[in-house]
Amino acid sequence: MRIYIGLFIAAFLLLNGCNNDLPTYKLDENIDIIEIDGTEYTIHRLSYKDKTYISEPEQFINSEFYERLELGKQIGRTSDNLQIHIVKNDANRLVIKEFMYSEDFFILDDSF
Image (tube, rainbow, N blue to C red; front, side):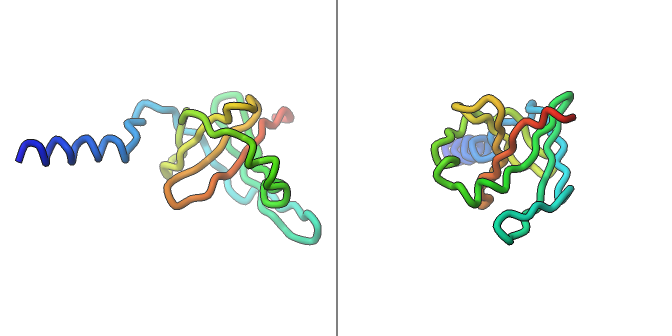
């Protein structure tokens, strides 16, 4: 019985990500709309402390570029527990993801 309890706790911690000490980023959804090739895309903003990132609708048009970006370690989360990861090969980008949620790329916005 102890083995099953131990396995359950280990699985729970693994699925939970043991990320209770990670910072919470503020996600502002639908802050703007941009039109690319006749299709409208919503823009989202992700911020933490003095850094602000803007979502990149280009990822839906130029998927080849974004497929080359490597997902790195988790560095934070949003208030609704979406995971925020660094991009290993691009220091100006972050990724929001979750199980059953596609990766959404954000780029550092210097205008804030």
